[in-house]
Structures are given as structure tokens and as C-alpha cells.
Length: 495
Image 1 (cartoon, rainbow, N blue to C red):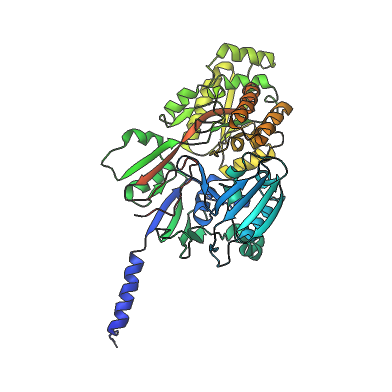
Image 2: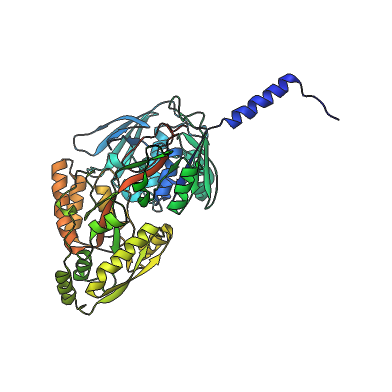
């Protein structure tokens, strides 16, 4: 029997349906599936993309790369550069309703120092933390550490709910809780990750969107087709070949601006033949970086020879690539006892661009009798191979950080957490440590210049180029803010 709904109930149902239909979702494609959703366990840039929505940081970066307040409203630094006092934002709550305060910050910084934390090297100089009151804490370092504030703009400065960390234990990597603009809802592994609006977010009027959905699209061309069709609003990568086809009347635009990162490949210096620096240098001077930038990347990278792009004060003469010199390369190989050539495996990402780079490197080394086989691997597998040393050469780049220390120290210092080359030099170690404890920018740059003079001769890592931040973005999207760390902020996005 049919019954008519009362008019008031019908109207309420229709209003609810209308609100649901009008919910604003921002769809973002990611080229890698984020692994662990805990900043203290993170090693992938795809994870950093998602973290920006879930977690706020103590400090952030603005469009020029300058450090600006976030959860810490202001800070002071002692004259001896060893004591930092942070004055925190009041009235902020975690997404589980628990309060954000100085005790929560202390909990996170101490957690970041734990043995199993990937942030332990960032935070290892913290000697003592004193909670002065709910909104103030004092951090004492064992030594001056110039990059400290910069470190707090990234994963080491992302603040998790202590209650959630204790509740979920080891499974916190799948149950992240921060103070950020969006709340983790769930994921379909390998396909998508969904976040809902945080109705209690501390920034008035934010977030603009009701939901953010990250869609995993490993193939840049698939992501591009989804951008064109409107199935995604932003892509975290963009096909380089399409940069020549941009139309003013199109439905999307491109963010193509300098980043702080670098791209290249490691040598495993613990294994022959890369235990001989003459072999490493020979390969370094056989590679035409300008050709790679032009052919593969359509000019959307800067050819480089150091970890420092023009966006960093440590940028210097070392970043100028060497001229290709086949005769010298052959002489170096002869000195290393490899006059007849040799073969090695280059492990590289699964993207078409990196495969093309690998193929160009193959061709560039062939005239010197060097044969290169190409092995493709997902990023997680590459990182594991790097840690284990189970590779010959490994193509892994770095998205970059604002302080130059974060682009070189862990990569080049003996036993550094990102030193997959197994390289060690006491002179380089000493120079990089001096740069860490020196606050004067000019003096720090001089230390980096000296370190690079050694590294361009020893070549534990072949620097190829500096990527641009390259996003595709629908013209229907408003509120996008470019930041040179290459991470998409979602709080202000709308459409």
C-alpha cells in the first residue's frame, strides 16, 4: 500500500539529498600508493602529499620557501643557538577530540627520536625538552644545529595525537590522527585513499572542500587522461611531452616551477667495479645531462651536478655539469684496470621517463665499452635494495628540502640513513658537520662548497638534474598555492 510522506519529512529528506549532492570533493592523482600513514615511519613523497591534509606541522613554508608559523605561532633562539622556545597556538584539538598542547609536542619529538623512527637523525640533537606551560616548551640541543627549524616544517614537525598513537600501537600506520584540515576515512590499497573534512579545524573557514580523494595512478598518461576528462582535479605528475601542447582555451593548466630536489643514481661503492672512484668518475663524465633534460623532460628540469638547486643558498659552481669527455673516461677506466669495459645493472623506477633516461645512459656509456642492463622496480623495492646494498647502481631522486643540510648530510655522511652508496670520507663528514653547527649562511656555503669539491671527484652519486614542480590542475580548481617543496596543500582548495 502506498503512503504519502508528511511534507516536513519529505522536505528534510530532499534537503539532505541536496546537501549530499552538493558535497565538494577534490580528486588528486598520485603516481605512487602511499605506504605508512605515520610521519615517523615515512620515506615516500606520496606519503608527504597525504600527510599535508591530515597533519599540521609546527612550522610551514610559504610560496617563497620561507619558514612561517603553523602550530607554533612564534619562536625564539638563544644566543648560543642551542635553545629553542616554541610558543604554540591555543585552542587547537586533534581530530579525535583530544587537546593539542606542549605535552603533545614533547611526546611527538621524543617519539621521533626512538630507535625505529625514520626521523631519529633529524631529531638526534635534542638533549632535553621542558614543558613550561600548555602553550610553551623549551627545546635544548646538545650542539648548535642550523637546520632545526627547517626540519620542523616537514615530517619531524608533524604532530600526531598521543592518544591515538597509544591506542593503535603498531597499527597507527593505518590509523593516522593529526590536527590537519582533513580526517582519514579509509583506503582501497593500490586504488584510492579518502579523507573527510575536519569540522573542528582551527583555521576559520577552512578547509573549503568536504572531501579529498587521492587516486593511485602509476601511469602519468592515465592520470593526464583523467585530468582531461574531469575525473581528477589535480595530478601530482604531468606528461613532459604534453608541455608542448598546452592551450589557453583548455580545461587545465600546468604548474611548472623550480623545486628544491634532485634526480640521479647511486653507485654501490662497496661492490666492484664501483669501489674504484676512477670508474665512477668515468661514468659521470660520459653523461650528457643537457641532452637528457631536452629529450626526456622537454626542458622541465635543470641539468645539474650537485644536490643544490638555485632555490638553495648552497648552490654553487659544483652544480655545473662536466663536459662529456670520452678520451678522459677511457683513461680513467684504464687506470682502474677496466680498459676492456664491464657491465652493470641500473635499477630504476617504473615510469616511462626514467626508463628513457636509463636507455640514454646506456647509449652514452656504450662507446667506453660499458654495458648497462636496466631493471625496473617500484619505489618501495628500490628503497629496500638501497638499505640492503643489493644493487649495482640505483636511480632514486629526492624531492628536496629548504635547508641544504637536508639535501646532502644523510646522503653523503658516513653511515647516513640515505647513504645507500656506502660511501665514507672523514673530510666530507667534518665539513658537513661544521655546516650543521654554523649559523652564518656565508660560512655554511663555504663548507658546502668544499665538501662538493671532494664529492664531484669521488662521485658516490651521479647527479643528473633538478626537477621542476610539475602538476596538472583543472581550471575549475581555486585556492591552489604553489610551495617549492613540491607538496600539494589541500586546505584552501575548492571548485
